[in-house]
Image 1: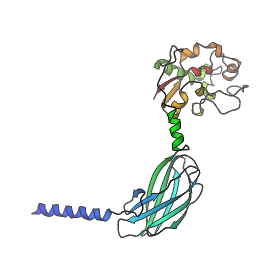
Image 2 (image 1 turned 30 degrees about the vertical axis):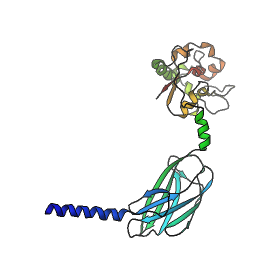
Image 3 (image 1 turned 180 degrees about the vertical axis):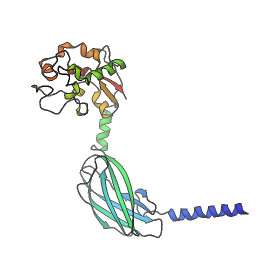
Image 4 (image 1 turned 135 degrees about the vertical axis):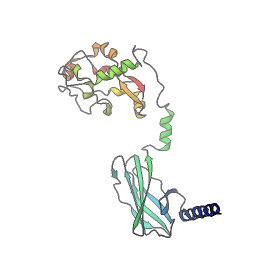
Length: 273
C-alpha cells in the first residue's frame, strides 16, 4: 500500500511540475527559456543594416512580465551595438524592438531581460553573421575544395618531411642566425600579420628600401588553409641552406648576416594541424 501511495505522489508531482513549466509564447520564432518565462523572437539581422525584432513572452507561473529589455553584444570583442534600440508594446505579451544594428560580422549574442515581481530573468541567443551573402558564400565554395588537397612540392626534396618542418620552424624563430643575435625572421615576417609587418619599409637592425614581403602569399595553397585555420607554416632548414643566392644586401642590413635569407620561406611547407 505504501508503494502505491509513493508512486501516486510521484506521478502527481510530475504532472504538476509539467503543468507549471509549460507555456507557449504568442509568436512563431526562435524559442528561449528561463525558470519563470518562455520567450520567442523573430528577426533577420544583416551586417551594417538596421533591423526590427519582434518578441513575445509567456509566463510559466502566475507572475506577469512587467517589462523587458533587448540588447546585443559581441562576447569576443567585448563591445555592444553602436545604437540603442527602442522598444514598444505590440499587443498582449508582445513587443517590437526597432533600431538594432550589428555593425560588423562575427559572433553576436542577443540578450533579453524579463522583469517581474522584483526579479529579472536573463535569456540569450548566440549567432554568427558573415560579411558575405548566402549567394556569395556559394560562389566562394564553388572555387574549392577548401582547403585544397595536400600536395608535396616536387622541386623541394624535403617538402612534407616532419623533421625538416620542425627544424625550419626553429630556424625561423632563431635570433642567433642574425649578426647581433637579436633579430629573427619573425621580427619582420610576423605570422599573425600574413608574415609581414605592416610597415612601409622593413626594419630589422636597420631600415631597408622595400617593405617586408608577405611570405604567406607566395606559397601556393597557403591562403585558403590559413582561412580554414588548419595549418602550421614552417621553413625547412635544407631549403634555407640550399638557396644562398637569395641572400642580398637587404638581408645584410636587416639581419646583419648574408648567409641566411627569410625569402626562402616562399618554399614553405604545410602540414595539417
